Length: 455
Image 1 (cartoon, one colour):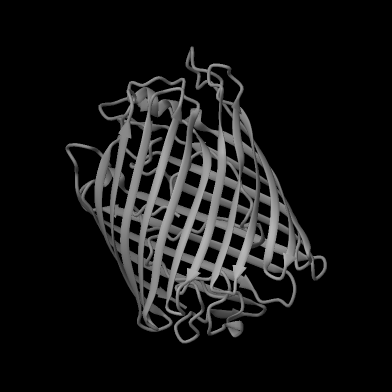
Image 2 (cartoon, helix red, strand yellow):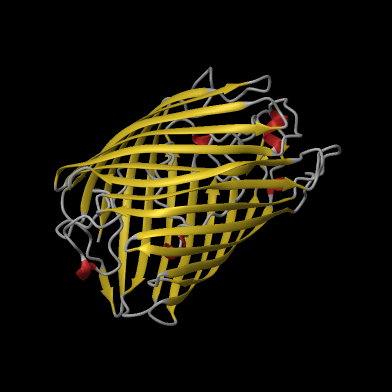
């Protein structure tokens, strides 16, 4: 959960709830995480709202019947409309070390969520947009949007089929290490995601088998001073099967083993550039772990194993190492929660970005490790406080470069009624880079004010 507050979008990723523990390796995509002031999503069935913390929930995630939206009932469905208007101040719009530019950004984000209210099976249809307008730097204006459908078919009380589709039109953040230097505008791309899965749950032995597909289509971007930067060489298909098998050795104590693979197939694996190695690759990760519920106060999922990405070209070699991850929620009291999240993944390098920085294009990518520590406190029933510290390490292969990024932020959310809320946050970001190929250092302050409406 890396706080990337350059944008305040409300686009929600296509994640099947039952598949939340599956690992999928995909090429780097710009972060779309909402700031900490984003409101919690309504329950699947409003009448099932509970008062106390549920296992694995933080205080900001639990239902609040007097403030949660009721939605509009449409037969056997509930429709949840939402509109957020954000005003941001960014003191380093282009994420540069020197000659920084500041600006105010207005972001308007409408979303619609249509959820089934059936006794069995589930269907969720979502659509939304996020439109950002800069006061001075109009070249950075953007319009993102998405449409998604996901569902669950209950064959029996313990066996179900899962499916999902999502289309997104996105842009790449200026603070991404893969954003090309010299681009006159942010890079735009379309992403298509599909998921199929089978799951057995509610028994001592459970499993989740899934197959995921993702297609990314990038658009060329104008270069500063004229010309065009070829971003279509980043177009890629990713195929990712995975299997997770679990065993509940005691009530709410579960051990699991998980293995997943991926094939990354680029439309033009060399980018049409002579001497650039073939970037197609295949990889896997294998982990063992446990999900532990300590008296309902502390919930933890931890795992460790090995991951590897092997590139077709011997010049690029492979990226491998220890795989680890964790999701820990400690409810110190019924009003305060501390959360820890961490993971590793292999990210392909954008050779165009490296070339634009005068660096070797023979880097396959980098191993990214992330850790996020957050604290949430319910000061009042309708006043929620949030603080977070995030760390990200990018260890490049094939070149001498290591990037370290810190994000430190705090925010609050005030619920006027179940239909209106106000949020605010501040985030400080610093990225350093070391090595003979070091580049991309910057620091930034970001202030955000949000007004939201929902039904």
